[in-house]
Image (cartoon, rainbow, N blue to C red; front, side, top):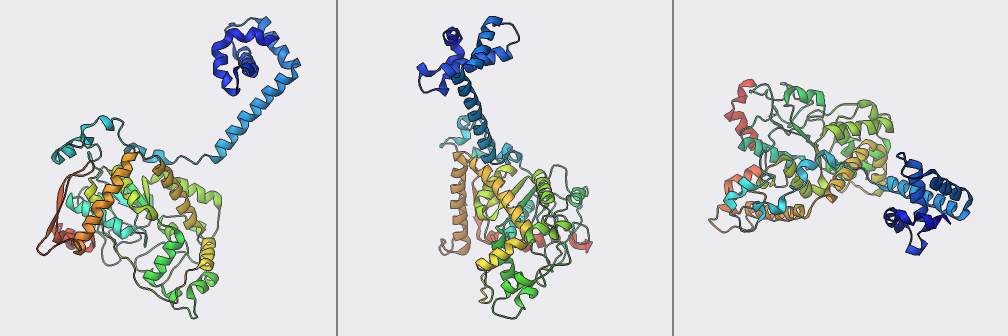
Length: 456
């Protein structure tokens, strides 16, 4: 048999024999390797007689032929199953800063006995911080809490912030009609106000290296919070015992209005609340075209540097810190605009949820897309990420207790936080707590200090 003649290619058969459970039954692997050498050999390393014998064995040895065909089918099926089940790899968008440095274990900044005062010199995460950021502030998606982080950072670092005029905290564009114009080079450094995402408009007044960050929330939870907080009249003024169900069953949206300040309290103009502020094309609110929906999601994926997920807010903020290369203390926050009102007439059960899923297909497509992307990134994090996450939660808890007065004794007006791998040591005064619960105070300081009131 030809199998005896194949022993001299043992170096290849040893690698191929993993397909068989025993070395004595490795004839199939010998044969596969031999066929491959005869088919792809172009240098004349094997004589024609040998390859002819291989070919004849392929034609006349039925058992070998079946084994070879079976092997090919097995490999093809495995590849197909792997391709179908493999989740899309979205994480390359922000992996540069989210992955820990390759020499982490060798860096002296990670040694336990390093003095806190030297941390910023060695810490790879807080060098060259990003100072140009647009945060897409979405109503009732923890966005005021996150926006407060950006306002505090911009104020402390003397950056040019897009400060909204009047009440409502934003507008349909960043034009001088709705925002105080930037005084330096006609460009803003940071925007974290309510402005719909229209990239062409942002590009006019922001730097080319600006990082774009968004936020999403589970759509039905978002809808519940929106209705309960703003109490839009076309919902709460409906008669009957269940106005939410009646609204979802009967409301017909025949007009489209891109978000404008102050409209939320009067009427909900569309079901896809987040998609509206993310700038989805108007036609998709009336025509569920899956191809165009996916096309716009890919556009957002390319243009957004990071999208936070409310259900993973702590994890999102730690990942965002790494993307921006900020000191961890800038990520500290208090929960702002948390709704505590309850209305017995506003029911949000399974029937309402099922109806909302049908009507808000854009919001669910948006959320599912960026949730999957976020979870993919989260799975790739190294153990040091979870060390930082635990430390962040501990420091934030201490800040909350201090500012609420739970952990302070009479006369204790400051709290000291030690340095870590992710932050410099810092001291917080009691009167600074106000800046963690309201952006209005900081906006007023900016308006006064920069003389923006002259532009009114």
